[in-house]
Length: 402
Image (cartoon, rainbow, N blue to C red; front, side, top):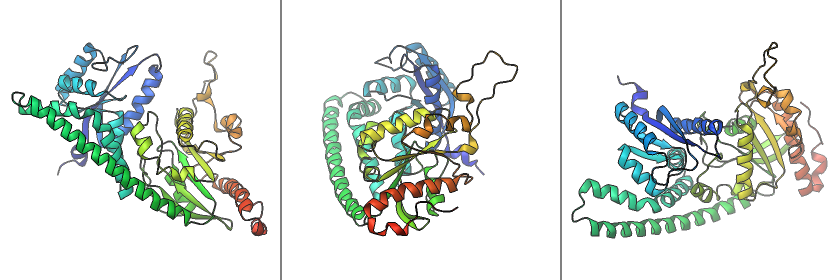
């Protein structure tokens, strides 16, 4: 019997740059994330290649010497896919493919592929298809050149150009059709949101794989799909939640990521209407991740893009069970204490407890500190609810008992 992993996982290599804007530590973080993306998509990373350059090579992204090193490794190890950490131009992709003779994809293409795997509903599939076509459109010429090489160049040059134009027209028509389809679905979803009445709406937002769906399941006692992979949730899920005797609506949204493709931000803006129309946000953060502060900044940047940055927000620092600070030996008189050495209590005493009012430290998986979390959410939801329904203020006490 064949090993299941041998069937599923595709041999890949990762390629990234160290530049002025991206030092070695940052480049390693991005490649760690890219490896997780590759694993999520079904790839097995055999090796990473990095190169120090002022700016990417406009023809081949990396230098010719490094590209030859990659080519030899790809050839010797029968690697099927080379994944680049930054978006490649159509010309770069075409040139690299000609040299490496394997499948070339960039971070944007990889994320689009994961989204295509994860999309289950008609709405999500339409959004992903739109993003894919918008990514594909400027790359059609390179793709046709690749086909011409396979079929032979003589007699194909003129018709090849005609085929490119025909294909571009087909893709543009498809993009137009998908945008109209999304506009129709958006109207239907707007009506659905309007039919929910005046209940307070709370949206879970955050970086991908921080535990939003796990928290959703714990709070709402629902069964939203949760997995330790990136972009486990694509479709927005809305549940009615009651804390104490106070009802409100809680929605789980798609996670964000650094270097998020522009096409996805655009096509998923409609999904993020749940965020735009929410009365309050629960910004979930994986505190066990070494780059969680960068994740917070990335999420805040995207919230700003979709006009959701000014909403009342509760910072929810999740996965405290997995948090492991670095420890300095008592005899070590040289090493300076940094944020990497902070305990959870140290973090609680930093800016975090002043970030937008409150911060809560929990473990959704182990259900640690959830009573405090429920109390704080109750108080914040109540403060919005009583302004909307002042006549039934007496129904909801200011505090709930454990």
